Image (cartoon, rainbow, N blue to C red; front, side, top):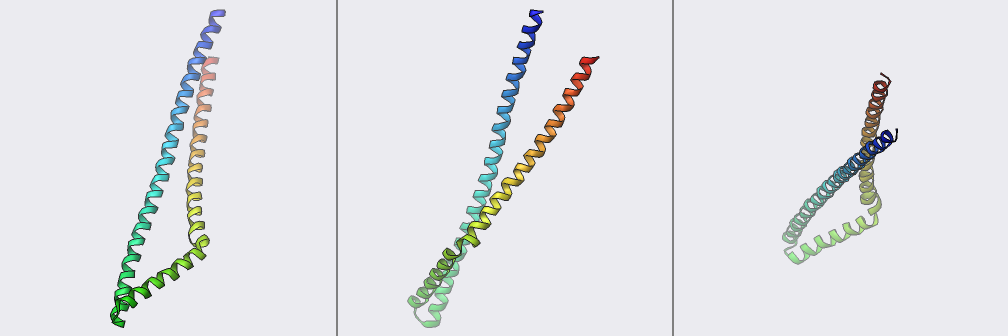
Length: 143
């Protein structure tokens, strides 16, 4: 009788240890998945901002040269171009929350919520599978 209890506790200990190791591996994989998605989103945003920056710089140069040719003074042309960009910067700073902060936060929240929904579905499927396996084990024990 005592041998059965020690065998039972040994088996339970092994199963619990395997469960904890598997759970730790699962947490590591989930963290790696979240990190890779976050880094992918971060780098794509950085790339988009860099491309936008270069477009703005070259458009500023074009505008400066064009106004310079029209006024026969490149100083006036580039000053007007710089003044326009300062004006646009002030407008952007004034309206940064509705134009930049809110859309970016909404995009990040949407990404996180969709990932959480996927995880919840996966956990529900795993729970169903575990319940099915437990029912099979109980059925086999009854036989």
